[in-house]
Each structure stands twice: as structure tokens, then as C-alpha cells.
Amino acid sequence: MSEGQNATADRKLVRVLDGESVFPPPIWLMRQAGRYLPEYRATRAEAGSFLDLCYNPELATEVTLQPIRRFGFDAAILFSDILVIPDALGRKVRFSEGHGPQLDPITTDEEIDRLRVDGAVERLAPVIETVGRIRAALPEEVTLLGFCGAPWTVATYMIAGEGTPDQAPARLFAYRNEAAFAKLMEKLVASSVDYLVAQLEAGADAVQVFDTWAGVLDEVSFRKWVIEPTRAIVDGVRAKVPGARIIGFPRGSGLLYTDFVAETGVNAVGMDWTVPREFARDRLQPNVAVQGNIDPLLMIEGGAALDASVDDLVEKLGRGRLIANLGHGITPQGRIENVERFIRRVRDARL
Image 1 (cartoon, rainbow, N blue to C red):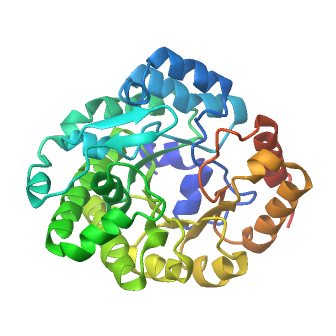
Image 2 (image 1 turned 90 degrees about the horizontal axis):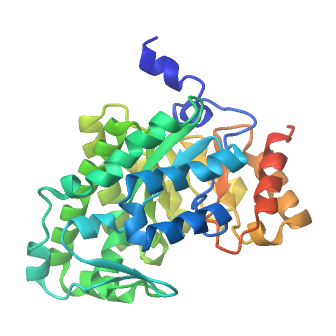
């Protein structure tokens, strides 16, 4: 076994992604570095804007490490944002308090043509530096996850200029001008491949592709704008980093989770909280590791409801490849004591 293999041998999440069933399962939370933590809020205030925090390697490393120090999660995830890609492509991204991300919306083919794929990763050099800093500071047994936004989800923000309830602007654009939308997706695939490869080469053990808005698409569009771009990313990354470990998270995909797993080549699939666990056990887990899927609201509520959901997750999925997580990111209202309760409940579980 090489030195690199030795270094990852004790990383529980890596073992699950490599095909092993590990019990109790490894734990991390989407958005585990966030506003529910007082130490994060203090560092965010020091940084100034949210985007400044994403592009400050020292402070981004600090907030990535904060939940590891506090909770002892089995994985750290790079602190950044899915919209650094359009920012690197030349579309100005702004974050305003209480309103979320804002971009200048894309309305013409010419604006897509002007997106600068060449050099995009170089413009994200501070983020790649953060990956290396995190890996150097993490305990050896903790997995480091990189990530990017999936092309469909990133495109929805680029077309609308902001998040919308059902992402109708992007859906309409794709129907009306499919060729231009396909060109946008190609540019997002190419830049995402380069970005993820850079993260893996800088020290990430695995990467996750967040498709937060996958669930708004019909079956035909889902295959065209979710499955095919994700498969292209998986193939493109592995062409440059053979054996790269990749988690897909097509939130809200319902029955189409099975097609996503079968056709994209991901090592694991993140499940939102609406996915029935018997369905996950019977249709997904035989083929990939599954990740999730506690309702994020239970990090607010806690108590018996949280205990019951954790127990059900472990009972139904704990005998196979499982990564304990939420079905989406923890909210700012999440309570620290409930995160601690969740971790204890998983780690004290018995089959």
C-alpha cells in the first residue's frame, strides 16, 4: 500500500465511497459550516462580504475547520459557493443579506458566447489554495470533500439572475432556445470538470455535485439537463483523475433517482428527505452508497422526532453503504444541541 493509500485507509467516508459498508456510518452535514454556529458568524463578520469569505483562503479554511473542531464530523467540506463558477466565467455575482445571490441575468445567445471558460480555474486559485490548506490542517482520519454546483442548478441562477420558486426562467429559456442553453451547459460542464480536478489534485478525497434544482424538471428535461451533464462531469473528471470519488445530489428527483444512479457513474447519491428509505434500500443502495436523508427541520425540532428519524435511517439503511447526513443543508435556525444529539444517536446505534 502506498503512502497515499495509507493516508486514506482510516477515512470512514472514503471507505464507504470505495464500496465498503461501515457501521456506525460516517457523518457530515451539508452546510455544516454556517450561520447556526457563533464562530462562523464571527469569522463572516471579519471577512466582510460572503464572497470575500469564499475567496479568502485563511478565513475559508478557518470556517471549514470550525465544525470539525466542535463536532468531530467524519468529513469536512470545502467552504465556498456553487456560484463561484459563473463568477469565474465573467458573470458578476453579488450576495446581499436577506436576498441571496444576485447576478446579471443572461437573456441573449451573445452573453453565453462571451463566457470565458479558458482561465476560469486560474481565477479560482484562492479556492484551490483553500483546499490545500484544509487538507494540511485536518486530522488524517477526516475526509475532505470538494464540490461544485451542477450545471443545471448553476444555469438556473445565471438565467434568472436569482433563485426563483420553480426556476421557470431557465426552463422557459431551455424550451425556447435549446441550442443556446445547451451551449451554456457545455461551458458549465467544462469549467466544472477543470474545477473539480483542481480540487482533487489539491487534496480533496472526493467531490460532490450539488443539483439543488433537479426536482423541477420533467423526465425528458431531467435526462437532458441533469443526467447527461452529470455523466459528462464524472467522465471528464475521471479522465484526468482516474478513480475519482464523486457524490451526486439531484435533490427532489423522486423515481428518477434510479436513472440518475444507473446512468451517471457516481459513487454515492445524496437523497433529500422525501425519498422513502425502503426505496433507497431496495433500488439505490445495491448500486451505490446512499447519503442522507434526515429532514433539516429536525435540526431545529430535535427531541423524540429526531431520534425516531435517526433510528429509522439506521435500521433501514445501516446494513449497507450509508453516509449519515441531512436531506439538504442545515438552516441558520438549526440548534447546536440537536446536531450533537444527531451525532450521538448515529454513533450509539445498534443493528
